[in-house]
Image (cartoon, rainbow, N blue to C red; front, side):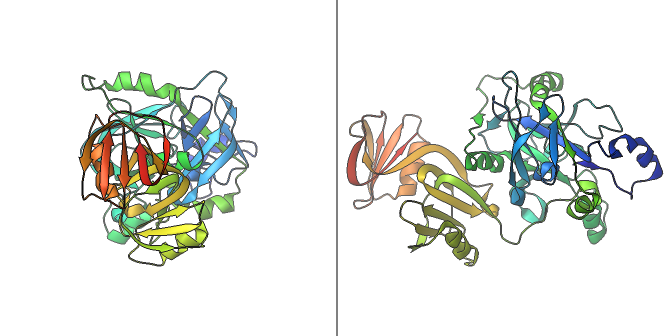
Length: 401
């Protein structure tokens, strides 16, 4: 969480933190980490959202903040000098009970100002009130951890430290819960990067790869993690936006949607609306309890409402959005889809009586499959083990890994 200077601190903490309350000192601090080699850092929106100036300690001022307030995510850019070592987003799904590490700069004005590492486990696969944008973690986190990475024992990114259970919620339930913390899923952050046209790295552990010790993981990850300082924030704004010293979860909308620009949410169409804008498409879905996802065709202005979503496939002519309650189940695939194009040759399997989703699933689960062609008129799917030269072919939906 971000630390802040405020009048409600005890006399002891006021004395300890006095150096940060000077007019020219930072108003709050958090953590960020590299997601590209050329200087893009990922953090929480509440770390940088109301700052007049953002400093990445040791790297100078950050520019071009990109904010996703709904999911408490932000990107900032610095001049890296030499290439950063970006963290790698994990492909594999999160498992209950997994060992994890959280890295950040908690209580930097009270304790040492160096990076710190804590260990723990994945306690639950959803956050407060079953919000599947989050995972619940037991790694101890303090003010200043906000925006820091949560990684697995192989060093792959699993989440972004975001919040602890607030005192207000503890008072509401009548129990002082211990060590209840939350991290935003890496898959949600990956979609945010893609919506901003920024390509992160992703991968999985090798079959014979041995888990790293905590010390080895710290050596591997900490060079990619930076302290972020916020300057110029007005205290009245800070007090209103981050009650309880920034230890609350972001406001939970009754229905929230995650945008995925450049993707198509495949299958499950139950209604199409023509001649509508993307925002109009979004509003229609939000007002329809049956709607769990949309795909908006930017070329033709058509909105497709869907009652379910299991996967996203790249499509430069599409913008998808899906309910946050589906976040844990959605496969963000490396496929790219094309309409009216075929790849002659390479067919090794034919699936009759199939739909597009079944065709996609068959290909993604088969290591030999490099692409598929689906013919809706015939309900036929052709799996291909090679990618030939594309050919314009009406009535064919093509997917390429």
